[in-house]
Image 1 (cartoon, rainbow, N blue to C red):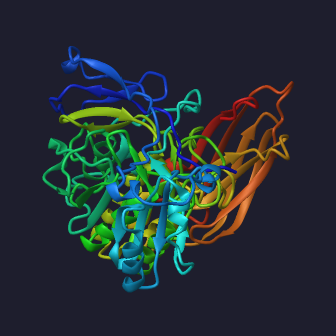
Image 2: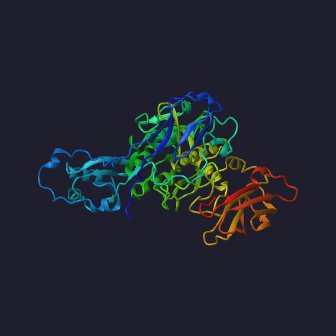
Image 3: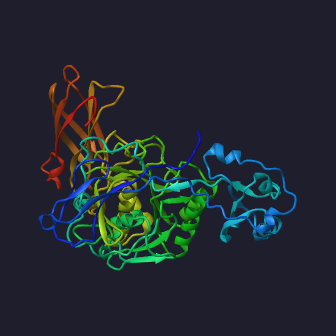
Length: 537
């Protein structure tokens, strides 16, 4: 099917430059990205919704052709039908050559017939622009690797919003993740690259921001993304405020980028010493060049984190869909996967992505939603675990991945991936003697709507034996016994839905450890929820 950018307009709520007040809370009041002030001390602060204007066109970034281009005999005009059909940028290609000599020979042949819009000397790669496909084709000798260049932007959509009842995060991110106390040193010594619209300086960043190239953020998106990592105030909390963020502007003021620019940014980030790269941009087009650069980063031990997308479709955007990239979807404060969060192969986990307090340009703040902001939360977690546990970036990600909390459908699924992050569990994963039996999720298999599946999980560091599970529902109370649960393992039990006339069904599940063992986290032992057939939870 044709590929192309995800388009629409991101909505955020903004405050004028802020007076930071400890304990200030932000609460959403409706809409996709809508929030209001909740602090009595700031009642008079102006709150205005900012809607980015619709983008008028895709930026082909064509440069006026060389004067020589207008002279002489050239092939008859030929439209770029291949790019049109693929949804790629028309009049552009990427070329990769076997060596520098081959690249220079092409450039010598090209003269003024095409525009060299970019080059990656390390890869012997060029980004070529042309007005006439025939001119471009006449320069090729068959030895080049030819690729399409796809538009990319921050994933957004006005067509799909969060489901009714979605709970905004406000400034509660750290509490949700289980991060307590002074965490200002988290991520210290770790360099994280943010490839976005740029990043503006902000009082919440504590001097940990290093712009690479152009400084500032003409859009605001990159600044909000960065605050998920660097935010260091009660109003604007970030996960790893001790880390260093290297800001690369790879998208313009409207949020547009492309496969070549993202690939270029990855290489530049690696050269600058970044070992974690957050790319809150995406495309539905598969670029051979970008895929190759992502593989290079993976082989070099660099982790790339990217969003799955916000169109609510069963298609994970590139680069999140590429092997080795950590693809992140979005949940609300209640742990519900959000309706706009893209699903499909390539999703690794879900993280908060609704109604988050974020920094904005002009030393301001905004309430933001989307998988764009779920990704940097995971990037910050990796940096935090690295610094706290003294491990590498790859080891930190492995620890986080092995200690995710089960959610939704039992086991890995293409909606929630492997689950939601649990920072205390990750940090204590090397501590022996922790017993923790937890309720994990309710789920109804569409193929068996008359059954409720109840899943529990061992979130401790010791095996659990004879764990009692009690489920109260419309069909009565059922008792189960989980004979043995290995560390991290789950077990699922089915109970009759038991509702009449297709109405709502209330369930209460409790989990109890046997053998006189003390449950380290009793707060996750009980869950009461109501299931409605038409809307789910």
